[in-house]
Amino acid sequence: MSTVFDFDFFIECLKSGAARIPVNLYVAAASVFFGMIFGLIIALIRVFRVPVLSPIFRWLVTILKGVPVILMLLVFYVLAADYFNLIMEYFGIDYTFRQLNKAIIAIIALSVLSSIGLSESFRGALASVKKGQYDAAYSVWLTKRQALVYVIIPQAFPIAVPTLCNYIIGMIKAGALAAMISVVDIMNGALIPANANYRYLEGYTAAALIYWVVCATLEKVLNIAEKRFASKVREVA
Amino acid sequence: MIEVKGLKKAFGQNQVLKGVGFHVNEGDVMTLLGVSGSGKTTLIRCLNYLESPDEGVIRIDDRTVDAQKITKKEIIELRKKTAMVFQTYDLFLNLNALQNVTEGLIRGGKIPKPDAEDIARDLLEKVGLSAKLESKPYQLSGGEQQRVGIARALALCPKVILFDEPTSALDPEVIGEILDIIKAVARSGVTMIIVTHEMEFAFSVSNKVVFIDQGEIVEEGSPREVFLESSQERTKSFLARSNFRFQPEYYL
Image 1 (cartoon, rainbow over the protein chains, first blue to last red):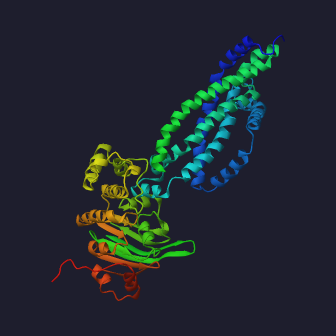
Image 2 (image 1 turned 120 degrees about the vertical axis):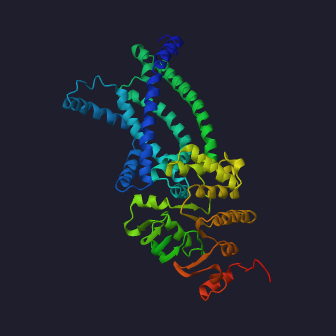
């Protein structure tokens, strides 16, 4: 340990971490994607007070909102570790937990969390659409489904966009926690060289820098999307 | 052509309609008068099932529905006999003027898009908006929005158009323009049911007036019978409080 900060080694960590950027991107993208789909379904169920399902989801959302991300990841990891092999055996598939890409577990756990989180922001957005819009849609013979698809959701979505963008950034960062369940993401990637010689300061700094660059770049891109939707919000406000 | 029998509707403990019945012939223009809270808006909203009545039978054209055993399919079919113009216009905020008119035609009426656009352009021109086809509702004034609202209802060629206080949210100077458009529509022979607080307009446009109070029909008849020859105390006191002044259209 000659110097406090070995710059060449830092670069090495940077390269190793940066190679894993796609892992974080697809974990985040998949979680937000599933989160949007299930979040919208949950939001619709709750806004329209579907019998039985609506109270179930109300409780589920309340409970799961209080679960830390890391706990969710670990629970799903442990569940998979215990039952994945049994299930595969049952169906006679020759595929074991060791072969399983752990990123899939991360995606499932994070999808659950983003479904819950996004359902709340979609619910708010749906509630902000004036009741007269439904009346008008029904009065020109649209069915409930058509009213939702062509009138209500197009008005509600722009309102949810800022929260959605925030969520995407949040999911990129939550990817760092996926390192805990042995997903080799930016964090684990940057630490691979450090594991050999215990120069963790360089590894962690490299990971931090990569995260920052990825998030800042993404934020710029998302800002463009937000601006585009801001004009849509003006239409319905 | 329209027959309503024993229509009842309650919101919680509040019995808004207490068994209302009336009939409207083809080509009739019927106005519904009454104080706020008398149930007139609820009544016309029941006709196209934006509000579900608790009891009663509604017949529009050849379609009869019983409130106690109506199905989703019947609701859609009943709505296809009607169109509505709203007090707060309620244009689709995410769509421009042209799309506001075509949306129902394309999705609900299953009319091909080019044909729907032709119909919409034609109607928007008739209401004087051919220059604003691409404008979104937030770019239009209240009067312009209501013109689109009327065009949207006309486009569906319904058996009856329901007007729910179409000028109540408008500035006094544009009310006249909208009323003139409605009068022109009435002259073209479309059956209409109008809820309004514009007494002179009601007197001149309709051939049938229904006065409703506390969820019941107090009086119905020709405008002359209700406005000038009413024997009902409730009608008289309502008309005395409204600013209706009978002005003959000609002097001897």
